[in-house]
Image 1: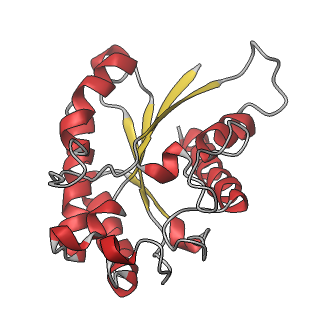
Image 2 (image 1 turned 180 degrees about the vertical axis):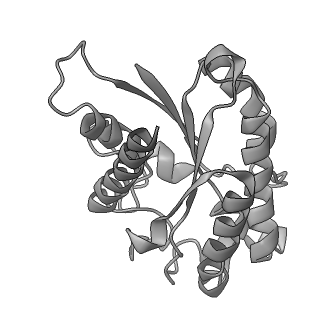
Amino acid sequence: MKTILCYGDSNTWGYNPTTGERYDHKTRWPMVLQRLLNAGAGEDEGRYWIIEEGLCGRTSCREDPVEGDKNGLRQLPPILESHSPLDMVALMLGTNDLKTRYNPCAYDIAAGVNRLVRAIKDSGAGPGNTAPRVLVICPPPTVDAPVFKNIFGDCVELSTKLSGFFRQFAQESGAEFLDAGKVIRSSKVDGIHFDPEEHYKLAAAVAEILGRMESAL
């Protein structure tokens, strides 16, 4: 059985933009991914095990002076160790780095995410103390909405600049890459999170990439 860690923020946790609560297991994209990958297999015959590791407010490597311990790089090593051996880590972070409190630029956000990629590859958390494979998912651009305006400001234009840098760093690091903005859209309700159908579309895109990767082995 292949084990995949989905490491991300509130969109991996499953934040519902309409209610502010958490989507159920049938809706969240990591759980949809598990169903898609194991389609047709019996309950005890699935080939993939998905681990959800989403935290609301998680950044790539930034210290949050307002919300507390949200540093994804610092939290990563014990999480990798506790869930090892891992065949792959699907990494989707960067949205919270857009917050105005960080005064961010697109290059720095992508470089921060790349620090996590390097940490995963250096971790020895894969089978036989090898490096897990890494899938870098660039979050889709945000949408202008008043709900989180006081936190994210006017970040829509900045968010559209992320994918090019994310792709560049992924290629340099030997990671797989998915531009989620080509597949899904952030919700018009709050501009940040995903509606239910977007969770399904994201899971389907990740499943397709995993299928291609296995075929290439």
